[in-house]
Image 1: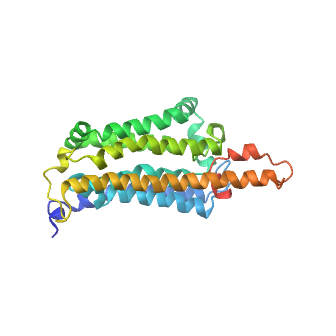
Image 2: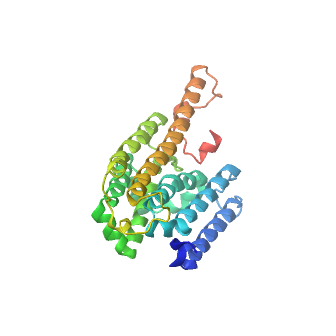
Image 3: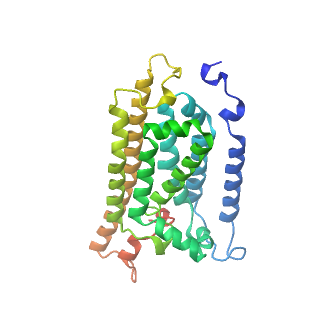
Length: 290
């Protein structure tokens, strides 16, 4: 047996409790998506694209948190740990938000307190700073080393990071019209700023010539050609490259979406009564119709 797996039990490598939770959430979503206006007030058809997006998000969440990626990243390879983070924080929220139609979220924000909290924490400046600052703090060596020694602390911090990741992506993929504050051009600037703010943490890891994290200093790396320092630098490179791919893809989509609508405005091709500026702020559930 591979040394990486010798000390690991089935529950360490595959989290059946989390799998059950993911399956239940997916089942509830599917039931709601198949509902009609008679059974649920305000229900509208959910497109295949939205359904695929939501279930892809759930699948990626389980891969990142419930598969061997979680165990290997925590105990052996820093690079796998960074891969896990890019999955959980940079991709999962995108698929979940684009898979949620407005009418599914509407009952959750009817409460004034919930609506007020969501309104505040999804303000672009608040959301972008919360996520990037907390992610940068997490990668400070003494912080990560402390968290790695206490599983409950680590779980709590990861939960906070996941929540702030959803809040960070909310201004770009907002399903609620009244909270969709950014035009397409401002979304482009927002995505660009996100990429810039994550760069220092990645650069610190990539260009460090010493091992930063005690957790990965004395482990036996399963690949003889990969030293712990190489593994650490690879982790920084992986996060930066995947971040650039994800942010670049979203930025390109928003840009061409804006460009297409500007061209339509220019040629007066909008249907009678259609308001371009209002549509530019259409929340993406929404994007599947853009």
